[in-house]
Length: 87
Image (cartoon, rainbow, N blue to C red; front, side, top):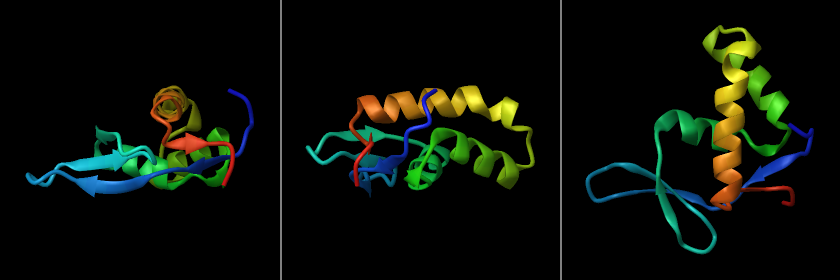
């Protein structure tokens, strides 16, 4: 994956039942888990690889074990307009 710096977009919300949402700037909401919110929150001008390294260190895993799942999450967040290359 390219070493582009990414920035989170949108905001965190929740359903009336307390389920977590990420809401993009257009108002589209996506039901997400706490780990996805944690990954999304890490993007404040970081590259995907920097976030992979950070997550791996926090959970005590080898970066190679978390790289592919995080890259998939990043792709989905970009498609949902929840990550972008500009601040």
